[in-house]
Image (cartoon, rainbow, N blue to C red):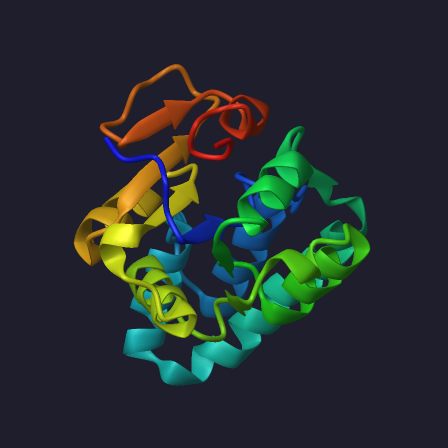
Length: 199
């Protein structure tokens, strides 16, 4: 398996940073707002389902999520090894970022944690709530060749998106399972020491 690449896309929350959004309260508020009993799990799939039925629900739902993200953004924490990985990779590859967070929270976090300079482009839920579409847009924005690119994320949805788009996938996953990624690391610090990052 090749570990070198000229382009790399990162997922943000759960991969590079930890963002303590009170998701249980978000779900409660969204159920009250929409009058449904949906579990909002997977979260954005249920959001999209509701919006498909009633597009007028999109704006108030996003405002609710934005409010909780704004409260959490000042407490966002960089994962150990994140800066090392980004610094090393950015010297040999062009980077983009994808996130299901909103643009306001994303930009506030990138600014506060001094990460903005590492990324040529970034795509938030305002661009798409579909990870495949986000990843495709990120690669296109970089002018990336798929066989010269990889995606770093932490969820099965990220793995599925990488497979659908046709790029290698590096999973950073603390859970003890072993999804069929091209490489699997239990921490970002472990990834930062790997051949994917180091020459």
